[in-house]
Image (cartoon, rainbow, N blue to C red; front, side, top):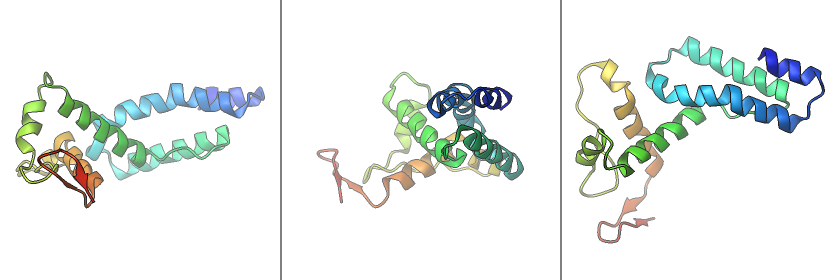
Length: 144
């Protein structure tokens, strides 16, 4: 934030400030948000959101909230795992696929810690992103 404010004091244009924010601050947050996932506390999340709002006011633009970034990055990571046959979690996710639809079944777990980890959280987000669409098993296309 210090360097962002410092750049603004030199009357740098808004586009360059946004590029600096994206390359320095947002890249770190978007990389780490998949790891933090469901285990981030509300206090930490509110502090990070406050940091993003402050950066947005310095840049002069409304920046994307951390929850939106987390959901998008988690689903992207899950899809990349599902597409990569050599990934160690590929077979785990492949066995969770429903035979009827494109949805993934949640693994059984007893502890909340496992329930907040990457796989269950990513599966919930993936299934909710599918919405009410049904998949045609023969063609692989989705029907509305």
